[in-house]
Length: 481
Ligand code: NDP
Image 1 (cartoon, rainbow, N blue to C red):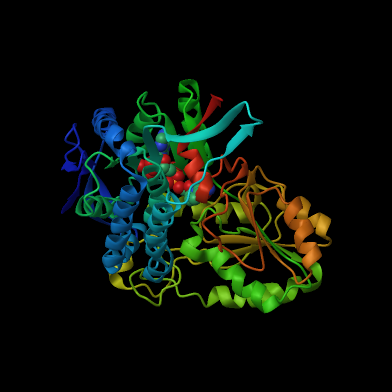
Image 2: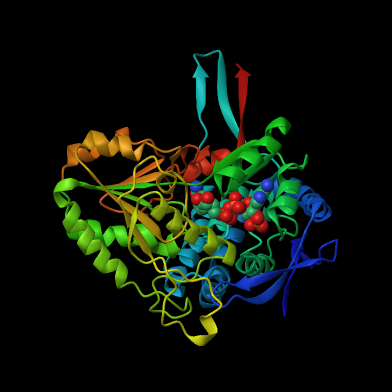
């Protein structure tokens, strides 16, 4: 079976403990690789390698750093098909989605930050004729980068690219559930001749490798994407060490459809926003609110489309909904569907195992997309992040009702609003407590805008020049003239 090692100082190394974990294909339930079960000793080795690489990497001219990252982007692009297939196999996601989103976005992440550093500006404030006060932006050292399993390559590169473009070295810890594309990326890092130690990858579990990285005294900044509960642990460990921390956490995002919306577009847009990547995207709109005048019509059309989604083999280009990430996660999501019934909801479709799965997929973690109605806004199913193909649909009577419902959870990551009334769109967007609001669309974003959550969905902003700000420290220099 394939073995996945750590990538430290430009070399692939066995974990110090000699232990390995199983990596499972969610579509079959079968092990496809063994991955390094790293612990503190491996993280120490990676941080040492990154610390040794940092002084010369930070002095490497921006143009050279940019060139190396552009080369890496080219290599990711040249290996597009292999990466898409690996991402789909490791994650259970439809290969069409990996080809449309994950891999192209990884390429864009590297190209965006490789070119952004060539155009970064800092400010200078002349103090009359007495002094020049300017801001110097400098890298901090070894960046600790921790990413989840749902968009493995996309989110890992979203952190690695700005961190190293800005002149830091890094230690990245992908999810133990999806190690394969990070491992392939490490091979490409070597092929691109990025100096050894600038990018290191430590595989393994969160409670061991992840915590060791978060609490390592040689790592001054942590960029974390994952669940809200884990984020609290990261903050608790990093806080007393005064690390710079960015947390991109969970969501329970509202999707609001007003009666004046183009209903066909709203339905078409609500399908991917509910079920893309099996609903395993932090930005998925898991709570749909529909103005009462069009509620019945929306529901009918939405149900019709949901029932027609092709659920099955992730490697089949026609598949629209693949497998959930693990048996444990499938049980969690299915548990919420049962809970919905206990809480007084009605499951109008989905929630079962697809009937026509091929023999080799029978051990996989598949779930038909579920639509639930009749729940109260305060119940657990409408308050807690499920992170699966389950949406609730609820009527509302006025914009104020919709805003109150949208804001009625502890989360504040993103929202979608469907309306043809531009003034209403502006008013509602301003009133919703979330880091991103989409109007008549979903998941569309220029990489230059700030990205992050409000409330329990996160702390800090990444994206574009905000990421370059996060991965550098602003120094204030005042020259007396
Ligand atoms: P987790 O929080 O379980 O894990 C995220 C990463 O942290 C993984 O690499 C994990 O390793 C690691 N980890 C786990 N425990 C610790 C710890 N105590 N200290 C340090 N690292 C740790 O999240 P999931 O992987 O389950 O991802 C799903 C969650 O991520 C959802 O809540 C989703 O909303 C959120 N998310 C947020 C995004 C955003 O931009 N706001 C984007 C994408 C997802 P391991 O897997 O090995 O346990």
